[in-house]
Image (tube, rainbow, N blue to C red; front, side, top):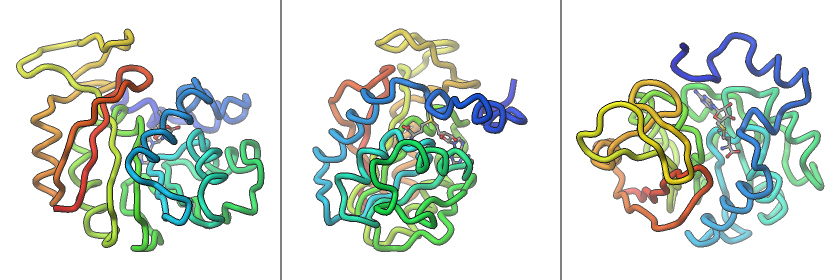
Length: 219
Ligand SMILES: C[S@@+](CC[C@H](N)C(=O)[O-])C[C@H]1O[C@@H](n2cnc3c(N)ncnc32)[C@H](O)[C@@H]1O
């Protein structure tokens, strides 16, 4: 099995050819978009802020955030440019509010061309599908590149310390230490944050599929 479902050869092309851009990001379209808007607004996001949506997919958050933010204040990155563009073509109420070059293909979280004026960033349901070792380099990149960042909102699946094997999350999703969807211990995520120059705080909010939210602020 590949380390991530998104690494299966032809995955994006096949699903897009079938018109399944919403399914690629996990469905539950309105509920999950609304949940992301709510956690961003709770974190202090206002229309004049600049938002980066890391692993933004088909704009499940983006179709709401683009309407909320001032025009041009939303940017997204994803491993698949075609997926982001499908979202822009089909899901936006007004695509002129999102310049095409604000959607950037980026599979290694190096954030090419993303300006350092970003205030808030979110990676929702992204590292839940990627091996643990990918988080630390990504946080290093965010810390180095986004010099004016207020808060990064990050979701993970957690398992208790010492837990071995599969773990059932609160709403039934079964996660794993070594294959997707992945879980970590809280201490492991905290160590990644500390090593990359962030202060982490866990947030008591219920999210779809039992993901857990943390805020990372530059230390
Ligand atoms: C579960 S979806 C979540 C998408 C979006 N954050 C949302 O909530 O709708 C995971 C997203 O991560 C993207 N992804 C997977 N591997 C990636 C990588 N290495 N770099 C950037 N994005 C990646 C996928 O293309 C997909 O859009």
